[in-house]
Image 1 (cartoon, rainbow, N blue to C red):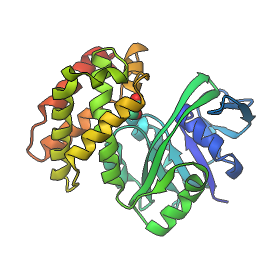
Image 2: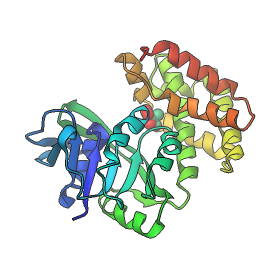
Image 3: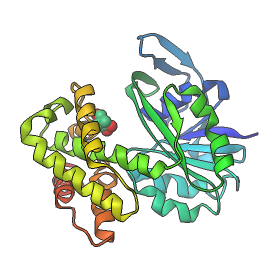
Length: 297
Ligand code: KPL
C-alpha cells in the first residue's frame, strides 16, 4: 500500500497530518507517541484524531509512497539520509520548508526517486506538543524538481485535494524564489530590529528591503530564473500589511534562543550570487547580523 508519511511533526507537519487524516497518514518522529492530535481550526473549534505514529528509530518504511518532510531547512539532509536505505525505490519525497537550498544536496542522493518541492503560507501555531492552532489559510504551492512528472503529481494529489487554496505549479523553483523574496526581506529585519512585521512599512526600512530584493532578482537571473522586481516588492509590502501584527518565524526563533533558517534564506541568496560571480552585500549583511544573534551550534 502507498501510505503518506510526514517526517517532522512540528506545527506545519501536524497541520498537514490533520488535513490528510482521511488518507491515514503516518507520523514519523522522535517524541513519545501522541494519544491524539488536537487541532483548533480557524473558527476556534477543537477537533482531535489519532494518527498512526512510528518512532523513527524503529519505523518500518516499506509501505511509504510519499514522504512529506516538514523539518527545518537545516535539518533536512540529516533527517532524510538515514531513511533512504529503507524507503521504497519509488517513494516520492516532498520538501516543505522555509527557504531554499537542501534540494541541491539531496537530489543526487535519491537514486532516481522523484523530488517535489512545496511552499505553504498556511499559518499554524503550536499550543502544546500535540496541539496546533490553524491561524491562517495562505497559498500552498507544490511542483516537481526531478523525477517523473505524472507520478509525482499523482502522489501529491491528496494534498492538492485536501488543502484549501493549494495548487500544482510547473515551475516550482520560480515560485520558491518568489516566496524567498518575502522571507529574505521580512524575516531578518524583524529579527534584527526586534519588531513585528508591520513595523517594516516605515520609510527607514525601504532602502534595505529594496536592496535585498534587487540582489535576489539578480541572483535568481544568474540561475536562469526570471523574476520581476516591482511585482516582488509589491508582494513583500502586501505580506507586511497582511501580517502586520505577527512576529516572523525568525523573530520568534531568535526570541526563543533557537537556531534560525537564515542560511536557507539570505544565505541561499548570497551563495547563489557568489556561485555566479556576483555580490549580494545587503543579503550578506542580514546573514551576518542574524548569525551574531543566534546561538552557536
Ligand atoms: O513566512 C513568514 C515567516 O514568518 O516565516 C512571513 C511571511 C514573513 C510571515 O511572518
